[in-house]
Amino acid sequence: MNFILKRKLKYYTIQILKYIGITISTCGFIMSMVIIKNKPMYKVSIAGTELGYVQNKQAFEQKVKESILQDEQKNIDNIAIKTNPEYELEFVDRTIETKEEPIIETVKQDVDITYKYYELALNNEAIELVDTLEEAEDLVNKVKDENQEKELDLSIVEKYTKKLEEVTTNELEVAKNDIQGKVTKKLEEIQKQKEEEERINSMPIINGIKLAYVPITGTITSRYGVSSRIRSSNHTGLDIAASKGTPIKVVANGTVISASYQGSYGNLVKIDHGNGLETWYAHTSKMYVSQGQKVEAGTVIAAVGSTGNSTGAHLHLEIRINGEHVNPQNYLYK
Image (tube, rainbow, N blue to C red; front, side):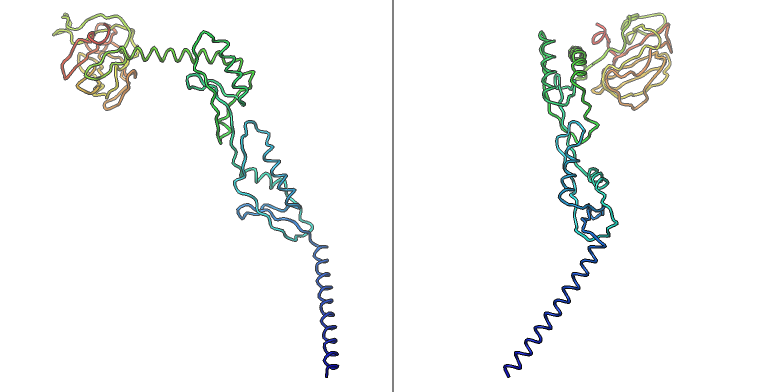
């Protein structure tokens, strides 16, 4: 009995080994045929979109890194790929070629680039942009050397942006040639601004309303309160002669009450400044505003003319407080 069992076991073992051998041979044959007709390649995709195939994943990743990080553009501080490529190993037809360069270009379109540059500022206002901190320090030293007698509030500001068009830096030599002119211009602007602030601060206040501008510069030809043969009553305003067309500025912020032809006043613009204060501008040749319009102090609202009851080109200026006219020379043209 044992002998029979041993013979059967031996028989089945031989058969199994035989089938295994056949299977291995078949698989080997199939693999050989696959290898002959196909080759292993990595399919590259981004966010599910297939881009193409590459031969060596590690070599390709290194190439991508070098291509992007060694970008020739200036001022690059950091580059990060927004969506990393995905790789899948496949056996593909040997006729399929790799597409590394097009894939790299596609990857480069999906990167987040941060640019860095340096701003040289005078009184917190930019006067020059350069590429490096060393260049900015060179400019500061140059400005200080050429303006030793002046107190300058100079600073260097490190700037970052995602938009390349904002990086409008100059080469150092160009910046050095231009910097003094820019400093001089900026100092002049600062001085003018300071003088303008001092001028406005010195202007009068009526009922809490700051009068910031005189309407025109000219010669006073008729004062407030005087009588004349061409008027039925005493003068209610101040006449300032100027050439026809001279721009007339509003004295303070306000709203246009009216801008129309009104009898002896001719073309008349009335402005309400609030708190009971109104200013009237008469005899104008042109009116540039309309009823209901908001205007800021210094806005040109009309042009000098000689419309209505007038003997020559001039501005008739009235100031009214709570409906009553007052002498403009108490506040302006002193």
